[in-house]
Image (cartoon, rainbow, N blue to C red):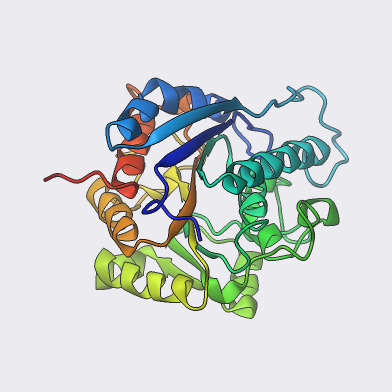
Length: 304
């Protein structure tokens, strides 16, 4: 198992994809995060950081087939297939992949790449949304709202087959933290799959430490490592305004840092991604800076 405790090498992989979402600007997320000095921040912690650049994305906003149920499906499949290959290649050399996006559809490629090396993966999905729609339940056709369902083996075959259809997550080892916007079809899916969802009610009632204790117990049970999928809209939009689909009443800045610090202390992290930073909607680059702050906490930065 590759963890941050035995690897000082990080591969930074940018994915400027916004085709899976419904608002322009999230494709500039990787640039905003880099401009907020993520590489220097991690190198100050003692890591050797190699920036692999960006996965190439074709601009197709004026060429979407209006009859296509899943918007920009072919290009999203192509980008995620390439991303899965790059992630698998970097992990194969013993490096820790840190993917920066881009909309949350890129989680498909990130995690499919990780699954080439980690057979039993636990996943913490830090998000205001649960992203378990399929082509049968989506009302928008936006694939960033389907990525977790795809990774569980449910969805369009061209998506689930990326990296091999047999490479998928076990719902018993997936937790969602911060959810507060769930579609009716997603509610049914989550119950059928038995996925543990910590809503904002749970965080308010029990506190982030109790939530993280239960989450880590679940994602660690029989797994070979943990992946963090960090969507910045999990935070309250007053603290992270630059996201495409903000939802009021989210996780605070300090609660978010505690979760990252606690996950680092657990010592089983094998990979991470940071998604949905939208500079066009941001205020003084606050959200990109928060993304870098959280990455620092996740990888060992402490107040003292």
